[in-house]
Amino acid sequence: MAGSTKQDMRTQLLDDIEDFSRNGPPLRDEGPAKPIFTRDKLSFPDLNQPPPAQKKNVAKTVAERAAGLTHTLPEETAGNLLNRLKQQAQNVQRSTNRRDADHEMRAFQLSASLGAAFHYLNDLIKQLNIIKPAVPKEFVFAGNIVFSGMTWVEGAADFRMLPTASEDRLFETMTARVRISAPRQIAVERDTLGVEPLRKMLYDASIGFQLEERKNKRNLTESGCFTFPCEIKAGFLIKADYEAYDLVLRTRNIDRFGMMEFRLQAGDLTHEMLDELAQMMLGQPSRFLKRFRRSA
Image (cartoon, rainbow, N blue to C red; front, side, top):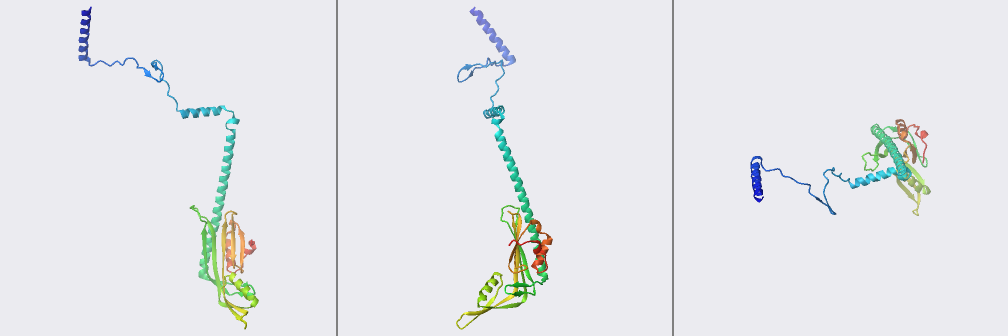
């Protein structure tokens, strides 16, 4: 039996060598599946079952569970209060946006009106600086001091913008300065009690003057002689009030000595209104004071 077995092994070996020379090396047999080592036990995979599904992302799984839980809760406890608060917040935001947009639009309209007034009056004053028209109106100062026979000397217009970092600049104020005069001097006598009041009134009206005082033997002032040119420095300012959405017009020595103030609407700055204001500035008949009531 031993010899027969050795003979069989020798024959099998020769056959394998012959097969190798003809067909090359035999295919490797992987054999049965290798065991999988886990922390707790040794187990073999079941090759007849499909591979297990991969685990879901933990965060995604938690979110899905939370969403599922929300849908299963009653509306009163899940989202009713939150939804109401969200709706209220949206309504407040929309209302705020509408107010902001409306305020911005009104501000631009007010600025545009003020800008148009500046361009009109700036062009008007440039023409008057060339023409130098007569000013027919007589201006009566305190104590029946009359300024008359004057003509236009010079004028200028200017403006100022609101200080802001935005590119959308808004007009804040526009101003006009005017000087009219006649080629003569006015001389006025005042006694001791009248010297100081007239001095103050001339100063407040921006009228330059010279004063020659007459004194008695005790060096006390008995009277004074004021001398000043027949000249009036006048002007006005238009300021935009963006909080009240209107305009403030302040005049100085226009139509009369002293200050006047008016409240105007943005729509009041029309060409017709500016014409009336210019005519009043030139001492010509004007309906401006009939159309607009003084506020101060």
